[in-house]
Amino acid sequence: MTSAEVISSAANPLVKRIRSLADRKHRRREGAFVVEGIQPVWRAVEAGWDVETLVVVPELLPDSAAEMVAQQRARGVRVAAVTAELAGRLTDRDRPPGLFAVVGARGSKLDALAVRPDAVFLALHQIGNPGNLGTVIRTADAAGAAGVILLGDTADPFAPAAVKASMGSLFAVPVVTVADPAEFQGWARAGGVSVLATSGYAERAHWSMDYRAPLAVLLGSEGDGLPAELLTEADQTVRIPMVGTAESLNLAVAAALMLYEARRHAIGPPGLTGAPGVVRSPGVDGPGGTVGPEVE
Image 1 (cartoon, one colour):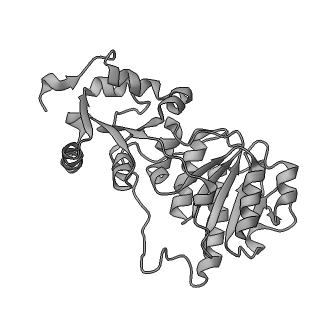
Image 2: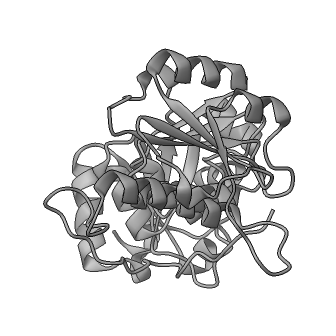
């Protein structure tokens, strides 16, 4: 790819499209979203998502990623190049990544979720912060959740902040959006999925429960928690004990506590070892650095 082929103008149609996909209305209309960073794009490719266009920054693209890009080009995927200066205008990162992708959005349905005997799902009610949502999806992936179910008017999992915070886990964990929580409750009853809801007013602490699968852990937003009707319909309610002056936990922290407690109960002593036959070490974040906590 020669320098003459490298896009440098913000008026280029591809660049304008990438910028327009920052808006939820445009993402819904076009059924596409943008992924930033070598590791997340690579995970989208490996997971078989519909990668419409790969956008490279030649001077920032390592050889290993360049080989993957060449393979995708050979399979018919469109590949374009932009200058580092223009790439910096397409991201809110301090340093632009070497790779972007325009990816076709994929929706999952409740009925498509596999309710295995050991399945643990995470359900979230009206989560407003997309960065929080992305971090929760990453947490669900790490803890082996069978899916993430979004209830009501919730943040878009394909929003730039959500995609970035998920660090590629969006392509590994089924994410289902359900407008009416009653549909989720009916699905849980029909599939024998017990619903364990969190509430600051529950009597039992989260570490004192059985966590018998198949199970759906239900969390509300940091500001409002869960509405009374969802708490009433839940099979069990628990609280995460807190001391100090904090009124609530970050959503991703609460999700991690609940999911890993469920994982601990499923595995039993001597402790968490990952999937059978696999021992995983803590990962190292790719380009963009560690995703910090977002606050709603």
